[in-house]
Amino acid sequence: MDEKVLGLQEKLESTKQELEDIKEKHEKKSHEHHVEITALQDKYRAATKEHNDKTEELRREILEANLTADKLRSKLARLEMVHSPDHADMIAERTMRESAMYDNDESTDETTTPKRKKKSRMILPIMMCMIAIGVGIMHNMDLLSLNAMCGPVMPGTTYRDTNASSEAPWWTPAPLKATVFGTVCSSEEKRVRTRMEYTHHSGSGQHKLTLWSVPSSSDGSSSEEAETKTPPTLLWEKRVGNKVSIFSEHIVITDKRGKEEDVPSGSLPWIVL
Image 1: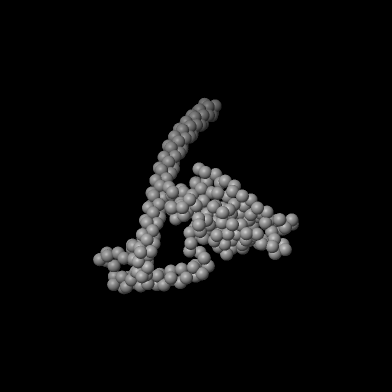
Image 2: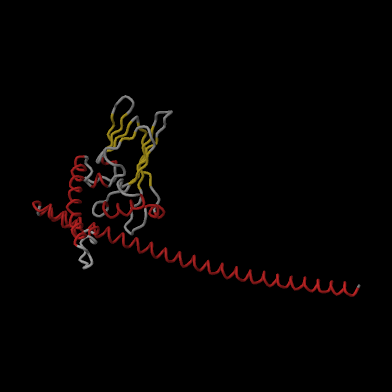
């Protein structure tokens, strides 16, 4: 009986040792697999980052090329309109047709159906009518000059009782502001891209208007990247009254008594007269 018990104990110990060996081998293989998978994940992340970086670089190059092309088209059209004002409509239509936004509509692909071609031909007249209406409205609101388009705030804006901050050009999406200003506003004249901040103090009634110089970009960098390279510079800071009205070529500050103070164009570096 004792021999049987001893035999069973030996088998049990042997089985335990085998299980320990199997467990150790399993843990070793698991660790090796984990290290291998981690290395592959690192390689994948590195490859993905490289791909994203190259894609972003290509996107910026394409954006810069498109902006440059549109800038050249606009310059050419403006010169032609000056020399041939009677053909302004024809020049505008041709410029729009040559613009990148109509490249696909004007495609000569044989697979394009007649219905699609007819629809494409209708887009340009409709767009031209909408542009003409928009131009008329913008002209009445004094929004078409470079002094108006290159400012930090839309002309006609009034600051009164809320905090506000806006950068030039006021009409451009934030990531593109530096590039658009560098392309459209800084091509010929030495305009300065600015940020205007209005701080409202309800208790004291003393409000503050601050103007900063912020960098533009000619290499496709975003506004945030441009500011990383060249930090903003404080141009001036004014204590203001109850209301601030911004126009294309000057600013009017109104105090509690209704007295108006005019900030001339000489203090607004985005204006070139």
